[in-house]
Length: 108
Image 1 (cartoon, rainbow, N blue to C red):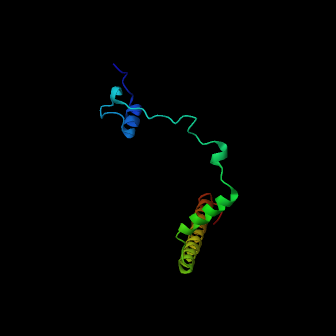
Image 2: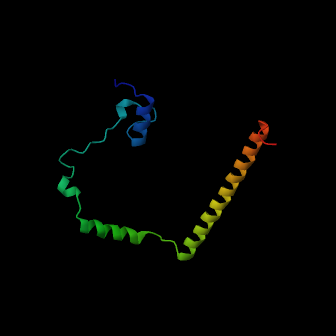
Image 3: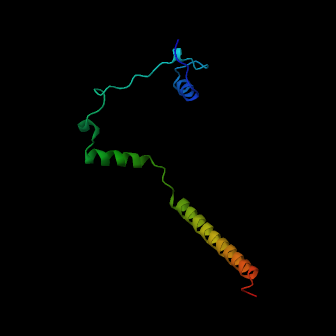
């Protein structure tokens, strides 16, 4: 009889599709680990700078760049939000500092 699985092992096995819903260890299928022979060597894993730039340019062509009008609109929204939040924080700071000073009777 196989040893029972704890909760974490059951979830992992169910996620991997290797265990029954009851989490029986006997039905667990282990995935084969790649051997060191299958791992790419350092020479294979590296790309040349030329290849890197080529792939980078290909990826940048896939990007959905915003139009000039969208960029302007987003910038205006950010600027307006920044001004609003600055004024809000300034107002709250002034209000609370005035209340604290009046509380301790430093300011009349």
